[in-house]
Length: 334
Image (cartoon, rainbow, N blue to C red; front, side, top):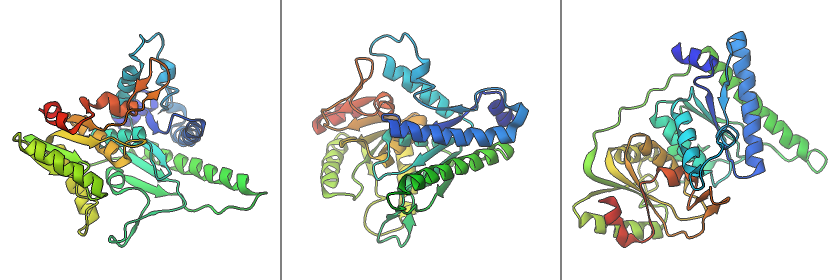
């Protein structure tokens, strides 16, 4: 009950994880938070004395004033990550095949910190892995990290006249779902039971890219494993997307291997870091593991000199090093 009192007092707000870089993401986050607040206020009534939610960008970027040039990203990271780890619970609505790496990182960070995590799937499609014999709302690692995953269901276009109304109706369903989840949280505090992190292999390195998803990633994982193995490191590779076997068991095994490794190397190339990899990075970062981002992407995420990063700031600021060339990986790891 202490957590519930801290929620009502504004000391442990619900963290609403959402996209931040464009108006649609902020709008969705604002709608999600509005539903969350409705449920919390209905449950807590007069006991609600402080801010019940934390909404990134508004409550982090907007709260930071007179920050020295070049420090903004790290100040945002410090504030957001502290709020995730101290949250009453984390709620996020996820859609799209390219999930936001910052949101995924926060999900992993929350899960490893013992914070309850519930996710809402907004897609009209599900993910199908042919050898698995089932459909998933989200990629397997995100489903594993969440305490509950809710699927809001399909919404059919209603033609020109009713299309916008149908989209708005779906967002109203999102708000009602968020209200219901948060009302339940405030009347019956959520419990989450996470396995204790395994003992750390001081010579263990986990490669979050040789996972069977593509021949190219396997090729570079082979080369990285040879380089690191030649320096005496024990190299483990993600296997959840490899052929055959039980995907759920393979995903859980990947998480255990990464948590047991002293160093985790994350493949970071692409328009955004893969959401499963970002979530795994958040998870192991919370456990105190050393994270190396490996990627040769040259463009930067830029919004002025105060915000100038190679990757999403949550990944950039939590990484111990960024490696552009494979031959530099052993030095960064060691």
